Each structure stands twice: as C-alpha cells, then as structure tokens.
Image 1 (cartoon, helix red, strand yellow):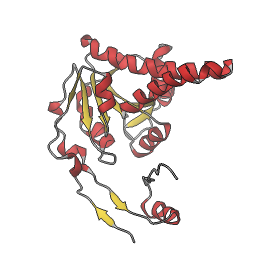
Image 2 (cartoon, rainbow, N blue to C red; image 1 turned 45 degrees about the horizontal axis):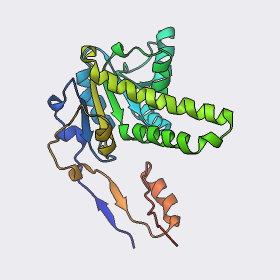
Image 3 (cartoon, helix red, strand yellow; image 1 turned 135 degrees about the vertical axis):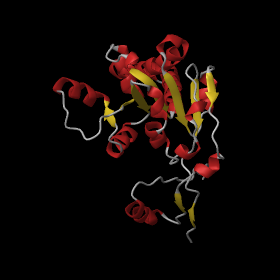
Length: 246
C-alpha cells in the first residue's frame, strides 16, 4: 500500500527577511531539504552582496552540477576564469555568483588563486558536511593511516588539509570585520556548525520549519518501485531505513 502526501508549498524565500542577516556573524538559516534554499540565496540573499559577487560553497560535486544546470545566474569557478580571459559576452544573464565545492575552495585559498575581496556575500550550503568530513579525516589519519602506504597517506593528508583550510578561512572571515563579507550557512541540521563556531546567530524565519517542506512523499513497499518513482518525478530523494542486527 502506498501513501501519497503533498505538503505546504511555502519556500524559504517566502519566510526569510534579509534584514535579519548581520555582517559580523555567521548567519545560520535552518531549513529542510527541498525548501528552496538555493533559490532564496540567488534571488533574495544576493541583494546583500552589494556591487560585488556572491560565492556559493557546496559540499558535493553532484550538488554543484545540479545548481549550474538549474540557474543561469551561477557560474563555475574555473569557468569564471576562462570567461575573464576570453571576454565572452554571449551570455543571456550576467552571472552574479561563483560556485565551487569546499575542497576546491580550500585548494584555491591554499595556492592564492582566490581573492576574497571580490565577494560581498558567501553562502555555505550544508556547512556541517565540511565539519563532519574534517573530523572524519582527522580520526582516520590517527587510527588507520599509520598502516597505509606512503602514497595513500600523502593523498589523504592533502584532502584533509584542504578541508581544514576551507573551514579556517571561513572562521577568519568572521574575525576580520574590515572585509565586509556577509557570511551565511544553510543547513537542515546545524548542530555541528554551532558546536564549532561561536560567532553566529540563528536567523528567525516567519514560519514553522515544518511548513517549508514542499515535497511529494510516497512510501514504497519494495525496491521495484524505485525506477517508477524516478521516471515520474525526475529529481528524487530516496531514504532507506537502517536496520541494526539480524
């Protein structure tokens, strides 16, 4: 038996007042998945960038590609450099935001490729994922990697190092009040962020969080239903219960 449910159609843009965001703290906006966080960032929060650009940081390459395919206002970090060299004026919409993963952000900062003064707003999508990876990498290095091959250990150290650089750069932005960069963290589960960063505020929204869930939910009895769900709905989130024990 299946159970179909269509929840309220409110999105983050409907309930966010950008006047609630402040310049000298990490503005944490807690909102569930599929509540229009990216849309709100580009069409509402982007006003806070002033005359500069917005930098959108994200935890996964897949998420980055999805945003690039969905919004013309966003361009990839490497693409931005190429366009500047070629002076490409063929775009219909002038991009207002540059997007990159946290790993690429750490890499660009480490080697001095990124000038943060070009940005008036930095949006950190699911910042807790960066923190979780950073802690996982540290534990892995302590416990497992003393026994790893030198080449494996070197590669893992580089990846772990980039995550620390990315996180520490975000913290330094908060400490440097002269940079005038508005910093926003979008997260469905921000507890890890709050445990690592002291200088933050939780942005008040004009609605209950549960009202923001604009998703279509279907319970399925077997794995055979999954291809049907994907073909009918396009973008699909699939949750699989975790059973402990036999």
